[in-house]
Length: 292
Image (cartoon, helix red, strand yellow):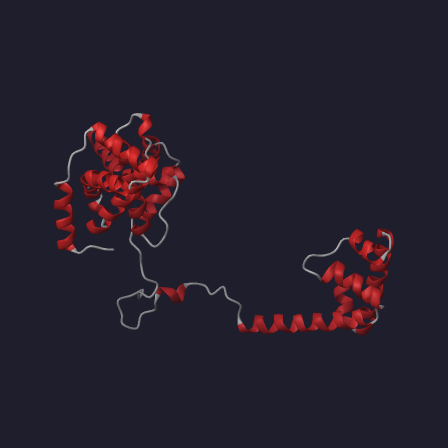
């Protein structure tokens, strides 16, 4: 449940006054939760390190997300850390929790940065959170050396510095350079200006195409019905089972059912096709041209 500003400040003050756990107490609480699912131990462990979660959340405020939401995401990361923490490894819980808290906050920031998914791979995440800092550093160094970096060379150096593909740098640069734009926004400042959505090509089936497709389907059904009408009952059954079912039958399975060999079923099917072809060719020039 979201907290309002007053409640969040009260929550933060309470977290800052929480007890500080020594290594042994922390380890015992972790054992109690892992082995006995002691919820009181879990609550005490989470409460003690909520100040860490809040502190880390505050470092991501400049990404535009509400502090309220950042703290809640940090808390979720802290709870994930408690769930997966193994006290037998001899690592302090705070050290282990930092990774989970940071990952939870970063995922939230990236999900909410844009309606378009900003990135999901490790290199894309690294770019999202480090690109502007590295870019500023490279520009400052180039200025000190009297160099001039154009956009392409700057992106190349960013890729080399962070250790990611150049294509990822170019993609992220484009996504971070602008904000989302509503498709209902007008292209000009005029009141009767055209909306951007009007410039998007409509890939849906047009009315004329739908009518033509329906006409073709009806014709195919009619031709098939005419062709099937000249077959014997056995031939119709073989064609239907071999060609008209979603899960078509094998020659062997039909042979077993009808008490015939696979070769005999194949012969019946071939004879049926020949009859159907002759019928269709004799009844319609359009069909004849299609089958020719």
